[in-house]
Figure (cartoon, rainbow, N blue to C red):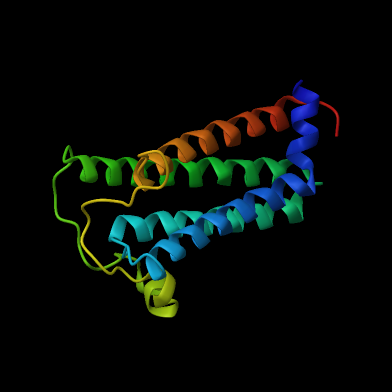
Length: 170
């Protein structure tokens, strides 16, 4: 089983799928923003930044998949992205349910050297205060779906990291 996971972890389709999944999620977010007029809050923008990180991780993994230790780093990047996305998603869910209180700024909080909100405002500009996320399907909100996705991604990244570290064949 571990060898099979390692073969998947090195495969081009795996890394392309991760990047495409992140791009598809960005597309869904933009559909909700521009077609359904659910404007993004700062936490939503932070999740979008983490999704961009998953696209980068997918591209990096695709490029370095034949070099074992670089592949480990790419898998660890997926784990970091998943952890960051999970933290933001939990905060978004807590804000939505009223269990987390605090101010939710109308500014992205991104540093000047990484001003995605200025460079690509149509994707990364904060447009409303935090409070709720839209319902997707079957009464599941976007925040709930993001938490589940982030946990799944965290597990996937961790399993693939371990499979890469513990498989002897190359």
